Length: 76
Image (cartoon, rainbow, N blue to C red; front, side, top):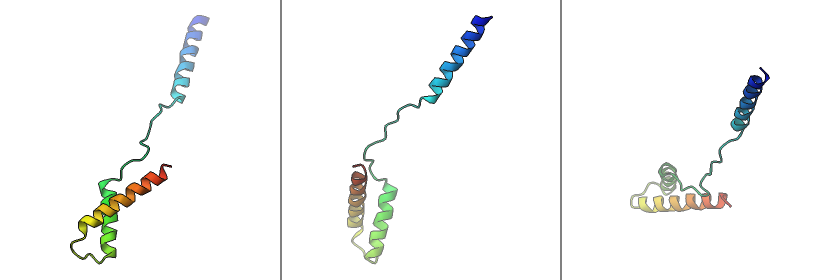
């Protein structure tokens, strides 16, 4: 009877120790900004310039550059 108890105790101990281990999940070092984040930043740039027409692409590109730079700096 002891061998059955030993087997159950041993398998329970293995299950408990493997449950404590968490898989190593690697996050990207510098994730690219999402289109939603870029759009929001571009909106605020456009707002600051009074929504005058013709600057939409520049707003988007500058917002993208700023957010990319921020994510690069935060990863260091």
